[in-house]
Amino acid sequence: MHIGPHRLKNRLIVAPMAGVTDRPFRQLCKRLGAGMAVSEMVTSNSLLYGSAKTARRANHDGEVDPISVQIAGADPAMLAQAARHNADRGAQIIDINMGCPAKKVCNVMAGSALLQDETLVGRILDAVVKAVPEVPVTLKIRTGWDREHRNARNILKIGENAGVQALAIHGRTRACGYTGEAEYDTIKAVKAEAKIPVIANGDITTPEKAQRVLDYTGADAIMIGRAAQGRPWIFREIEHFLATGEHLPEPEIAEIHSLLLGHLHDLYAFYGELTGVRVARKHISWYTRGLAGSSAFRHAMNQFDTVAEQLAVVDAYFAQAARADSRLRYVTPSTPGVSPNVRLAA
Image (cartoon, rainbow, N blue to C red; front, side, top):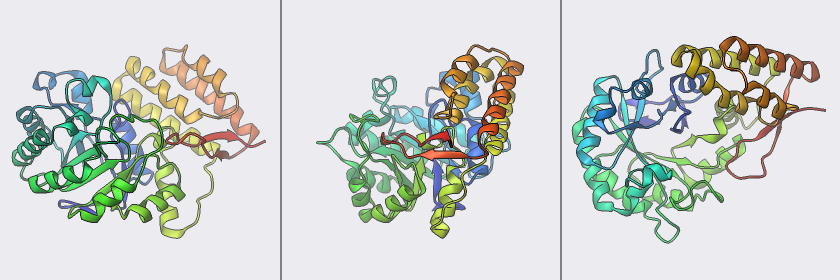
């Protein structure tokens, strides 16, 4: 699959997730099989360019190409300025957020709220594409703003006319948030009319589901978000399954421990000790979700505020887990959109 001049190594993309897809997470997912990872959204408000948080979000040092940066906002001129700002600092793809359903984003008519105003959508896309003629612009949307107004096909045409070079669609409306099940009929209908690559997103939690979504929608690629939280190796699992129709062996506990430790050290280096320890807590929780005794472990782990303490309790927990079994055992989730839990085999 190509996005502008960039040829992706496969059809697997890490979805942009606020507070999750920072540089350490993107690098890890790429190393474990993702063909591209989109950054967490960067504000279009130029007043925030100098903030430490925005600087971290735009930090791509050592990251594998292509570097895709997502920008969010509602003002065409400010979004154009944000696109130019990020392109000048190394962004190779500019992605526009029209898919986030969060109230704090939609209340300022950004994210998926923009889908209610197709005229404004066109103005934004025209402005951003013109601002960065040398950089491909992509767009992430939902199927519409509610079930009675699924206008993704209209947005496709607006995007193609503006020069957008790929479209990612989450199979829910803005009103759905993350409830219910993602639907793929709209994505299939959009792909049938599209002249640009279409990326399917929503509830893709297993290799089999990835194959079914690709086959049903005809999408050029799939985008995985929540299922990769605490399970970044999902990308190599899906890549192997798509290529061979076979499953990779379940990861060994020792490997998961090693991956987590590497991730933690990257977080500490990226954020510093104080913020790094706090950010690390949610990742540790995700990595251990569903494991025997993990609830008590997470409660204890959240009491520690230093790197040394956090690493010590993680090492102790995984040492105990490894004594019980050498491999993790997956349990198929009953709730759509939630990544499979993991437990220790009896």
